[in-house]
Length: 85
Image 1 (cartoon, rainbow, N blue to C red):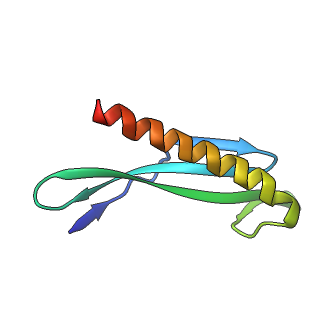
Image 2: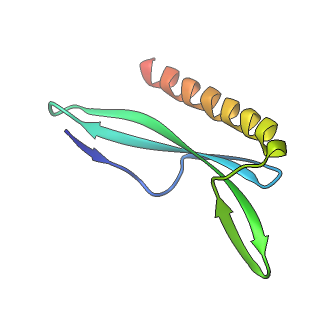
């Protein structure tokens, strides 16, 4: 089975320096292309004049991360539901 991924997210949810990016990928098995989603969570911060990102979160980032991940999950469920119709 081969997997193809795209570099650009199909949806990004942002709040208070955190972002949850949803990526749509396609897996090729027995000739049929099957879509599936992956989500990346990161925090952006400034180091001097430079912006950087990390996957390490502080205690106060956790409620925001929970909210963004719930939004990403809802988006994925809606996208999958639209495909079934």
